[in-house]
Every structure is written in structure tokens, then in C-alpha cells.
Length: 227
Image (cartoon, rainbow, N blue to C red; front, side, top):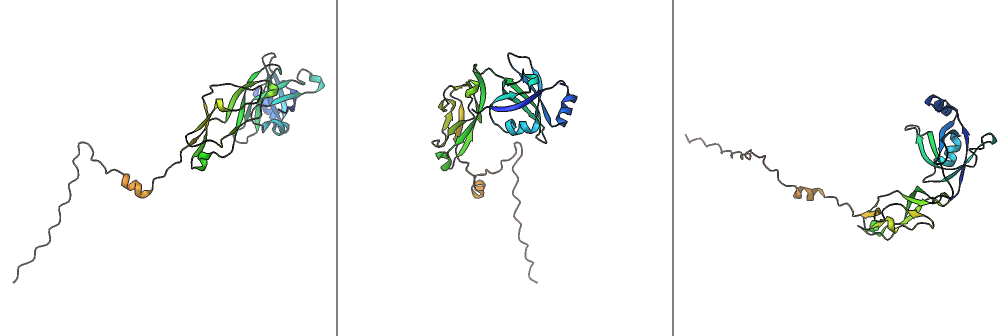
């Protein structure tokens, strides 16, 4: 996996007002934390963050770059654990970086990429992904960008399970192997209007209410007598 580099600067203020002013300058407030170090408040350039990190899917190893004045942050290896965006503008509001040890295995989420056209879909079925990503365990340097899942052999009512996935060497699955990843559903059959009318049952009388009586037939008018 290719390592991404991003420049960070330590920040002093951690309150909402300070974060708001920081965003006004085009920077994104963030935090760097991990099991072996205290949390550190930092900031990153908003444009650089979007260009290098914001568009990535899955977990990617990130190398922090900092100026000589703050050597403690320089060369620290992290993963982007959380990213908050504005619900309307989509602008990045905050980011959480989790520091990792390159020699220790960790659990991460990896996206699934479905390839091919299932034979069940050709027969009229509907491809139904159940999972879009899976959790795996591996070294930080061995995190796959995605796991490819070939759905070509899938027929209607057939499925691929976690245990069927082919994982790269050094990557171990986390979870039950019997969990369904993707399946092919049978085609949806639409009822034609004529068939629906024939299949519709007659309205049943309401309990306790007698059925409506048929209206009596009208008697023809009597002919008048001859004079």
C-alpha cells in the first residue's frame, strides 16, 4: 500500500471558538492520539487534506510531516480514524488521526469491490450486496486498498460468504466465515391489471351486518282499459 504524506501543525486552542477561527483561515482542526502517546491537537491545510486524504476509501497509512520546530510530530505513522463533514457544504470540519506501530497487527475496515456480472443477474435476478466493507487484521504496512469479489458464478438464490473471500497474504479475516457478503435475489414479478382483477376477492360483509338486499325489479306500467 502506498503511504500518504500530510503536513500538520500543532495548535494551542481546543475550544469551539478557536476551531471556528482556524477553519476561517482554511485549516482543519484535528487530533493525533494513540495507545502509547497523549492526544495532541493539530491542524492541517484544508486543500491539502482533501487532495491527499479526503477522497480515499478504506484505511490508508499516513505519514505526518512537521517543521523542525516540532520534531515530535514528524514522521509519526497514523490512520485516519474519523472525519467529520458539514452536512450541507460537505466541508471537512474535524479529523482524528490514530497513531500505529508498524510492527503490531491491528484491525481495520477494508472496502469490497464487486466485479463481473452474475449468471443469476443475466437470468433476470438482482445482485444484492449485503456488505460493502469487511474487517480484517494485519500489519499497518499490509493494509489492502480493497478486496475484490468476483460475482460471475453466482446464480439466483446463491451467495458468497466471508469464508469464500480470497485475502492477500498476511491479512486475516475478522468475523464469522458464514456471514453473507453478496447474493442474487430472484426477479420481481409484476402482476398484470387483468390478473389482479381476477385475483381480487369479493368484498366480504362486515360482521354483524346483513348483506345489502337487491333492489326489487320495477313493474311495467299497467295498460289503460279500452274505451
